[in-house]
Length: 418
Image (tube, rainbow, N blue to C red; front, side, top):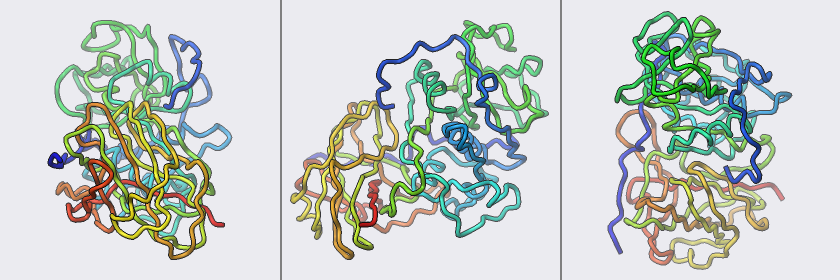
């Protein structure tokens, strides 16, 4: 057996927040050369983060809001997300999309803006999530056709960029205020999040202060109020150094009554990865049923594209030796990295107090550490509490206890009442 490998942090986890500074879609329709949410009655509300470093929360919730049907569109609270006690830095020092994913996937939110208004520095407690986010796809291959299709068919796409702009009234050699056009051509890491809400393949290269190699740009919405750009919107060149390097789509948003219980130990989400220097690994979490319930689904991260998985259930779990008594309950293929909720072939009846386990075999080509974990990365951005009973294995037979390695396995269980 090869030695397990830590990944200390996630490659795309830049600190973001310059407030002052799919599954296969079947037969795909051709995309238009130009598309604009403002012209399609899909444009979200332009918001203003002010001087706080909360662009990551604004971008994630704006993208989430645009993924809802028009008749169900809601305004979600950035305060509730960014002031969660699992994020000890508060609102001034920025955050990242992994944090927003963790908040949403753990059902801490989203909650309506009216229930926890932005800017008072106080988080309202006792609120329940208005919707349940069950799937988030994450692309890092700068596939612009894929980004456009997600904008067109699903909702706005959250993306990280680099900008030296400090707000609505600042200037930059990379920004043309007359055309609301931005293009960065350097090598600095991303420090701001925006949402892609359209595109124009013929957008003139001459509109940029530093003309790119060709025409074309994405239409984006910022979080600096309507004083910035074109009433809060602006164009970013297809040739920008950072746009689309990380593209996040909220592809699975369901009614908050879809499941009755969520079992989880990874409240801080996908902080790092573990593996055995191979593209295949096994991982498991043991839980105790809180009542008479039906186990309906498992939730976990695919840490890379083209991931194959098998999901097993152990109905009477009692430590690692019981994990071989598993039944295959789901299997499939995931084209994109991200978080997925996988329904079981049939519900598994559980009695109150019953110990059960979910076991997943995962294969992510090109990865040597395919299992998502949470752990304390030492950056002060998250308050990680190691609390679960998780296991990892290179072959599904010999198991290592995750908590002995100071981490929790990212593997959730969803149940309904009997």
